Length: 252
Image (tube, rainbow, N blue to C red; front, side, top):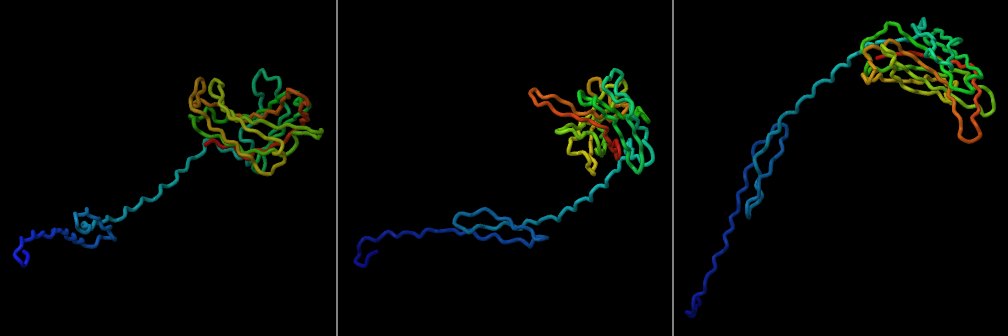
């Protein structure tokens, strides 16, 4: 109240602020556990929750060993042609070099010579190698046929502007001669290359009349490239005997 007896002033009570206590830290976590943070309390400092223990690291299992799958066919031509031989691609083939094609083996490669002549300058001509050794094989669906070949020499002659090349087909024929095949090629810049090209064809699963469980022949078919232009000038073809080497044929 005032000293002269005036009305007593109304005292204001101080606002009480409750400060939340700090939650005690727990013991140290094994292997350096992370300290968890508790929720904030009104007016108080952020409380710290107990220490969260971190478990030990789970050891990873060792890598599995590689399983070796033996090839179904592994022709490396070390001492023979391994059952591969030229044959006429189909009975009605009028553009087949079915004679004069030679295949010999020595020093780990099979040398294939195609007796190309001027007939190949006016149409596609076909030469084919095949093997039926051990056929029919077990189901080859999903198996890959890998052929390593190179174009050694010949093929395109010296005519001015001569062009050309070869289409290579890897063919799997089933029990009724339905085919599954992959298409690859040699172009002019491949002639004389020292490195082998690798052609890999995966035999499809059963599809329509094709049955990979009854494969009875594998073939390598080589076609000369031939085409015409809709406008002049027309391509110049000058095919001459061609020499190829086959390093290996593997089915795996």
